[in-house]
Every structure is written in structure tokens, then in C-alpha cells.
Amino acid sequence: MNISLKVYGFLLLAYPADFRRQFGEQMCQVFRDGYRSEARSGSVPGFWLRTLLDLVLTATKEHTDSSATKGFFMNRRTDAMALLGCVGIIVIALLVHNYVTRNPGVPSIRWLGYILDPLVVSGVIGNLIVFVLNKTTKLNRLRTAALVFAAVDAALLLLIVVISRSTPAPNWIAVLFGYLVSYAVWVGLHFAWHSVSGAGSGVHGQANS
Amino acid sequence: MAKEKPETWLPLTPAMFHILLALADKDRHGYEIMREVGERTEQKMRLGPGTLYGSIKRMLSDGLIEELDERPDPELDDERRRYYRLTDFGRRVAIAEAQRLERLVKSARSKKLLSARGT
Image (cartoon, rainbow over all chains, first blue to last red; front, side, top):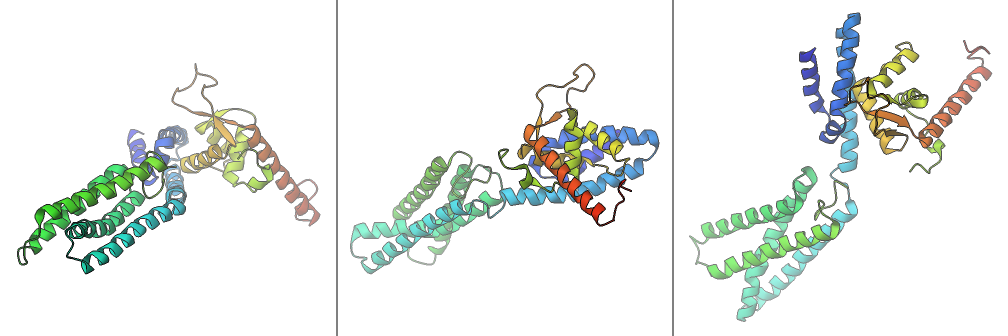
């Protein structure tokens, strides 16, 4: 009996975590009661067969329902707004960047270029990773954004270090300043969106709502 | 949600209707529902734990049943058990489903698929 119950408890992993949390204990209890009753009448194999069939069919259904309510394309309106916002910022940054490269003589504009480069590159890569992670995991959205942008910016800076070995060294203070500003802008925007759309949601929707 | 017409919820799945029937006369916990359904249908309908709690989950969220805070007989029972009760809306939905099935049986009789005695 104990082994059967342990095996059934293990098999419950086939169900979505939310469903298990809500009903897992009750299902084990029902299984135990059913098993005891069937053991008295000597039809345990039939009971196991029915239980396994039930498990396969209902676990599939629960996963389908779960992905329908928490799926990748849930909160399309919120996602679209966030996506449009990110694309808008990147497009504006690219336009300004284009203007800056045409007018390199002005020192203040040159500094702006150092900010716009990481803003665009880090924005595209970082937001894409944050979007996918927010849609496929239950990680804290704000912390995810902070860590992802830190990792992306660190990777891009490392790339600049590698490239600069064979090219003239850039103005490192300006490069670092640009990445710090870019990091502050993107993480700040995620923080603002997180505050506006409610705790536990984030830039790319409210999968838990 | 519970303000909607009961008819909009029809037809119910067989498992859901059997669970509503099991709860129509008494508050019951999960295993008691399973046992009642099995006995009433002469073991032709056997609910597995997944079917039972999958249906319970949907019926709870749809307001057809509710979970009780207290246990009807705490002296005799395992305190971990959860009891369920039919809501007023759930009862109306069960009645609407029963009436729908009754109309269906009448149609079968009129087509001579069933005799007047239902055999």
C-alpha cells in the first residue's frame, strides 16, 4: 500500500504545479481510500489500470487548460503595449543615432552616441530574453529584468574589450557611462511598468492574473 | 458568473452531472463522491482521482459547488478531508441538465427507441 501510494504521489508530477498544489493531497487520499477498498475485493491491478488511464487523460487536459489560461500568447494587449513601447524607444534611439553619426564634430552629441549604442543593442537583446523568460517561467519579473540586462551589458562590454584589441581603444569612460545609462533606462522602464501593471506581473503581461 | 442562466452551462459533462447529483442530497468529500457515483451507477461510472478533481476544480471556479470550511462530522472523519456543497446556482444547473435529459428521453420514446416504461 505504502509503495503504491508513493508511486501514485510521484506520478502526480504529471499534473501542472498549480493543480498539484490545490488537489494533490486530496488525490492521494482518494487514491489511498480507493486502493484499500479494491484490495479487499482483490482487484488491485484493475484499479491501477483505471487510475493510470485516468491520470494520462486528465493530466493532458489539465496541461492544455493551464496553457490556455497562462499561455505564451496570454495578455496579448499588455504584451503588444510593452512591445510597441520597446520598439518605439529603439526606433527613436536609432534615428538619434543616425543624426549623431552625421554630426560627429559636436562633443555633446558624441557622448549621446555612446549612450545610444548600448541602448539599442542591449534593448533588443535584453528585452527579447526578458520576454521569453517572463512567458515561460514564474521567476520574479523585475529581478529577471535586472539580471538579464546586467548579463547582456556585461557580455557586450566583454565583446568590446575583445574587439578593441585589434582596433583603436575606445573612450572607456564614455563606453562604461553609456552602458550604465542604458542599464538604468531599461531596468527603470521595467520597474515603472512593473509598478503600473501591479506586483507580480511585469513588462510582458500578467500571467498569474 | 453565477448570475448567468443555467441553460448556458449545458450540456454538462457526465462526470460533472454525476458529481452534482452526488452532492444534491448531502455535502460530501472526494472519496464519498466517487463511492456514491459508483454505487448509484452500479459501477458503470467510475471516477478516477484526476477526473474527480479536474471536474471539482472547474465547478468550484464556475460557482456550481463550494468548499466547506467545517466538516459535517469532525468526530468521525479525517480532518484533512475537504467537503464540497452544491451552491444554489449549481442546483439550478443540475435541474436544468436533468430537464434537458428528460426532454431527450421523451424524444427517444416518441421515436419508439424506448417503451413507455423506459426499457
